Image 1 (cartoon, rainbow, N blue to C red):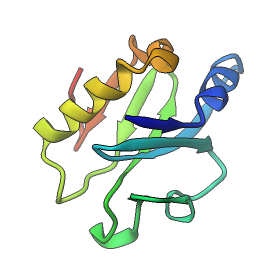
Image 2: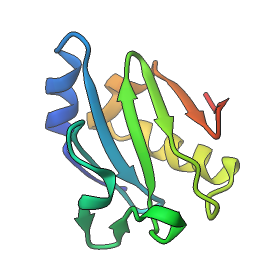
Image 3: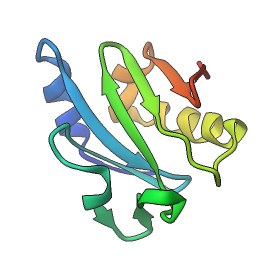
Image 4: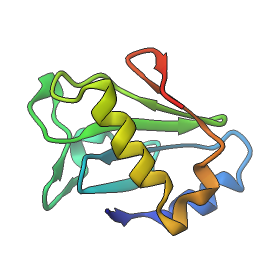
Length: 108
């Protein structure tokens, strides 16, 4: 899995009240500051769009939680597989203890 922005993850986690975002799919993830909108982050093969038009999930990370916005093209099983791969990335082990929620249900 190709991951961009792992430095931001480490920097943010050092801050009290951290809040940052990501877009992700089966092939990659991009982390970015919480002030940016998910739909503005565009990378080759990775794009979140309103109304389920993109190929990526919108993610918010805060307070020990990873919250993933619903996307009709992603089943809970598929999201679980994606998150397992993401959390196995060597630079993201710092997120392994976080709860993961998708469609209002805890995945991890």
